Image (cartoon, rainbow, N blue to C red):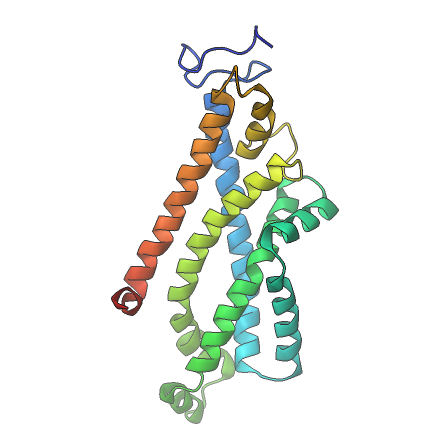
Length: 235
């Protein structure tokens, strides 16, 4: 192990090497690609599942709405990380499996927000006027209701990306995320903890990247919230 670990700031390895001689800078850069791929894919998948279901449930009340709300509330009641661990354990390692496990956490959020705003907006006078003029339900949803939901969805999306990065790293850290041959921040944190005293850079650089990228998307979400919902910033 001593022959493969090099100093964290020694050339040509700016971030040092890991216990098997791999360049940590390359792994951190490649891990950024993997983390963003998983996070954005999970958030997008949840968006395209939760929003249509929320529009349908909010616009057409009935048995379907009660069933969907029961399912979403049941998923929402579970602690997020525990639910992701359970799904990832069943599906096994793999990028697509991790995306499915993480996206399942966010579908109820998109559903609840979309359904709630749909219930409010569909009672508006301009929606009633459009309905009296013969507008179809689909056109009402797409032209009048969905545009009112989008500002909230943009903020939620940014926050979910930040949360997905943390969740993916957590799953990889406990061995339920990506295969070990894929460069990943969580995998690097898990493998580097055994060499923390003699090779601090193995966990420092991946940990810093997780923190910085997560904070960046969280701050982006707060900024978007202030821009898209200025009334909230005045409270």
